[in-house]
Length: 102
Image 1 (cartoon, rainbow, N blue to C red):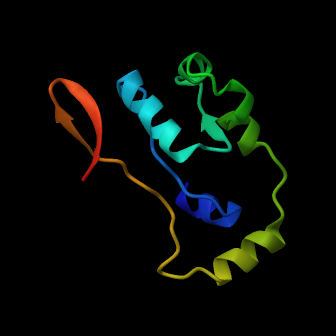
Image 2 (image 1 turned 60 degrees about the vertical axis):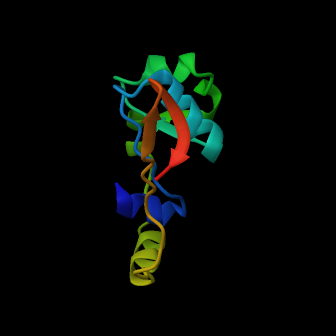
């Protein structure tokens, strides 16, 4: 997954279906994603958060045609400092998810 994100020029933020909705909303509002790739288990949650128009199912993405020349060029130019993913860690205070990043 990380290599595909790099090839596409984007980074990855893992969202777990078991996360509280408030936390997911806070993360999405912070990063303002242009697109969200979801699977069958998270489709309804994406719709309920209002991101249906800016989302694609994993099944749609995986069936797209691949330009191998682009992949080879990107892989050959990978740097150890390239951003691949972001993990949000939140401090739990007063039984609510805060926006205190740690």
